[in-house]
Length: 332
Image (cartoon, rainbow, N blue to C red; front, top):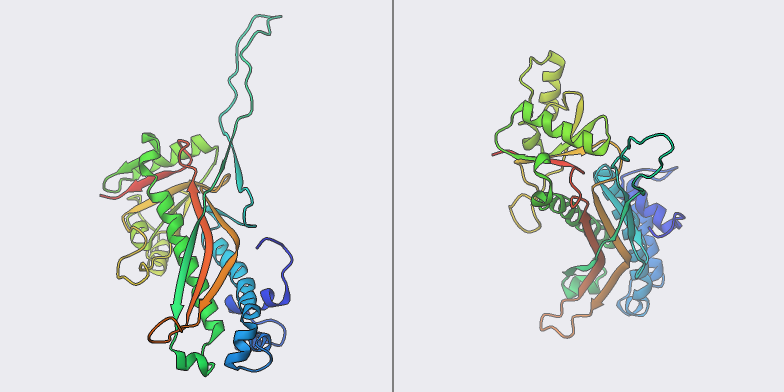
């Protein structure tokens, strides 16, 4: 969100979205309270004409509830690799990335101070955003009867934007393969020695003592160092579908999903990312401005179906223009 202070509707929506019961309310009761807030905005009871008169108050509630749930869900799923900013419309979203290069040490004669000056170099850049839209419709009879479950609509739209941003984060990293320095990437069957070399390169470039390895369950299952595994490690493999450690470095699973409306997987199952466990997060994501909520009443259509449009300004960029920020292993 643009502000740390959440209003009551935002707090209620966030807890309900997270499935978190608070005080004396369970999740179903919190959803009921959200529905009641929307009904109250309509004038206290559902009526087509009251809705038309007060619909912008309803849309304002929707615009309040979506951002906090979206950013919270993204931070929880991708916080280790992506920095996510929620900014005001038109704000300059500057990201400053420090350079990890060490200073060169010169050998000189006593009394000689004539050496090359060096400065602390940082890279600053902005992330371009584009408007992303979701449009849904309903039958006019259901709309007139007040049968739209707005809480369900808000939840599904928020999750849809979240799935899109998650795919955007992954693709931003995956598509930058060609920009990664040759020392930090490899394509071929898994080899423990090659993986250790990639890990060493990322550690040296970033100054990190450990790395984190990210991939889908299928991708991570490729990683085994060839040594004998204990019964406990084998049990964890059966539990997670992959060994959760490689030579002291933790492995984490990307959530896999289908691209919306298709049976095509959103995340590649044949590659893993090697990230330093400290320092800059590799992908920068910007959610700009408040959500846009609009409608058309259906009178311009032969079928009379009302349409509802939800929009957000979204953008992402990767830091991989700098060599060594992370490594990638593609399994042939």
